Amino acid sequence: MYRSLDPTKIVETCRESRDSISQRFPESGLSRLASELLSVSEQAAGLSEWLSRPHLPLRAFAGLGILAELIIVVEVLLNLKMRPTFTSIAEFLQGS
Image (cartoon, rainbow, N blue to C red):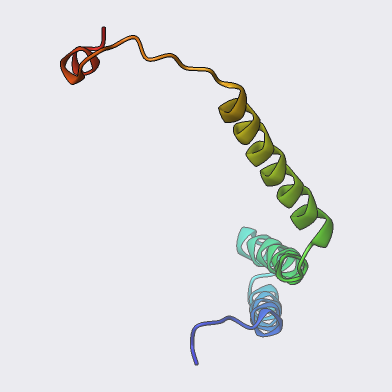
């Protein structure tokens, strides 16, 4: 119920605050701050909308990268030839 923010309401609230502050304190630092806050909220709303959509090329590129890493790991494991140089578990545990 209260777990998401509506970007249009945030921008609307910032716009109303900016208008109210600009009427009471024209050409003040507070009115410039309110204008900047409105600008930031509009940009954040646009960015939020863009980020909410799935980006299929990015997902495909990430999937190909993961697949390439798995292929490399499998190839290394298949071509790795290890010869045990220990004859007992004691030698193995000592690292000789």
